[in-house]
Image (cartoon, rainbow, N blue to C red; front, side, top):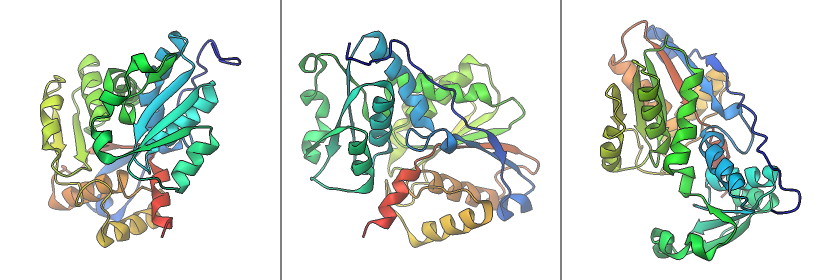
Length: 297
């Protein structure tokens, strides 16, 4: 074990209160909307990143590994979260970054936390599992992109333990699908009845539907029209919505994940989808470091 490595994880419960949020569109529709403020859990290991990394980190400690290796894009919240978590818990970290060599605030922060970065071509990245095999990296836990997999889903689903049964709808944004899968599986385990909603932020995300169906929870809706043009695609309409929402609520939401969900949710509200008096919990899963890309010219 690396010198200074903690024998047990010091893993605080995330500070993520349920906060009632008033926004004119929602108020006019007679909805009671709360945000699960996962974005407040940590400045860099934010939101569902804390939760999805939890059991990956516990597994690494149990195996007495000293290194973490993971994958992501140039503005990956997961890359930054893994770097910060590794520094916090005494791991050496390495991030495999998709695409050409670049420098940006997110990657610079990851390096400040001690992460070694390796850039690989997009073609090789698509086949990364063939290049980065466990047997070639002794004493290393290889964490899937985004903290995905069964361990990530287990951690992500635990947020439902902190939300009571008074809610009619609980919703989150959907990228790789691991958070939503975790919610669906935990809802089965807890025998919940509310409707779970997932808002896709990737184009052509219909392929994830089969995996959600296999989770066994029947009362859910996967909304694929919320991607706003595709992953990390940003429109003037979306940016205007972010400014309007933030200026009226005091809550920031990033343009890659959360703003797309909230924007499309608001459109559904205006269409009359949600019955008057509905009580709704929206998971704000952080991702605010992604807003740094808006500052880079």
